[in-house]
Image 1 (cartoon, rainbow, N blue to C red):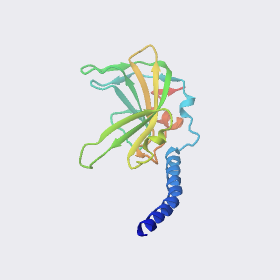
Image 2: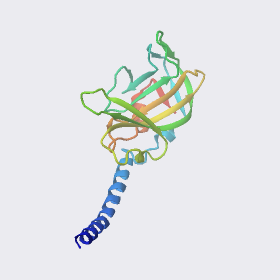
Image 3: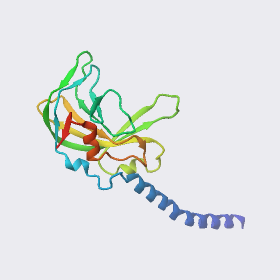
Image 4: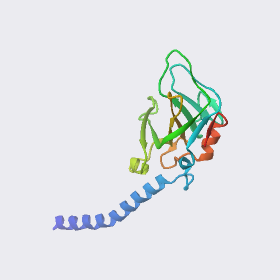
Length: 195
């Protein structure tokens, strides 16, 4: 008799909990997919990238970062930022990206997750590129900080120039947003223009 009572009690509780669990899952995925700009169509506005001045890529590096319209060696992770990237790394020599125009051949959203298992251990970066429903990546785990952004894959005379990447602010997954067109322009300044 006690077994029957426990079984019916369990079934009643289960029937009551299922709608709340489903509501929580739906709400979580919707809030995660929200962006600062709900109509964010930044990537649809861009078809070309124009480099207006020579950019020096230091030895041992493949990327040069931009923030607040300037080339920076370190950037504030809590403000939008961009970087231009070359394909080949030169360990001993400087590389130069000359002024030129590049066609954007592909655009992908990026989702970069920083995983920190212990505050006193080294932070590790895990990168996942996605082009569809990024909210499903972390539906059950929104307790990490991420960057959300765009990779603009480039084609031009200088085949070593690989891509331009722009990110929104580093934030918990449920607060992270894609950079807007204006935020990307502000990060790049007059050094690089988006058309």
